[in-house]
Image 1 (cartoon, rainbow, N blue to C red):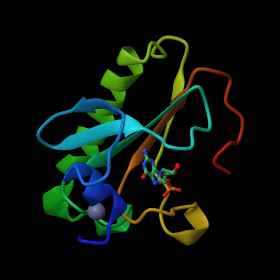
Image 2 (image 1 turned 45 degrees about the vertical axis):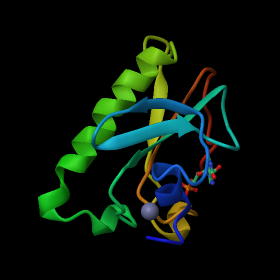
Image 3 (image 1 turned 135 degrees about the vertical axis):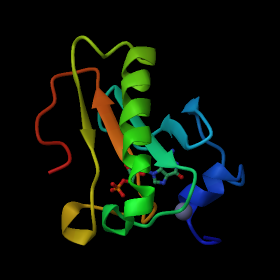
Length: 114
Ligand code: 5GP
Ligand code: ZN
């Protein structure tokens, strides 16, 4: 998707503070963190929303969750606790229409994404 911010990050056209990467996903610090740890995990393949994950693509959700576990350990928040969030469509708070999972932690979380 030529006009997608997160596709541009995957392609290296927009810089990011990379935290983790494998063949399927890329994870980077959120540009406007809502907690001491706020990482965004994206599939490298463009999928607009959670609703657009096809049965053939279901593995992408496993890849995001697997990356979230790694990131929690990399960031040192695994034991204290953290939150994963996928916003979907306007009322779900989705602003960037490239599927992504937020990983939030580093303090006691309230309703930051609500
Ligand atoms: P959403 O509201 O769509 O679930 O979350 C999108 C997230 O992407 C927001 O937390 C926002 O701060 C983050 N974001 C938007 N543009 C950029 C960017 O260019 N770089 C980075 N690192 N994060 C971004
Ligand atoms: Zn995209």
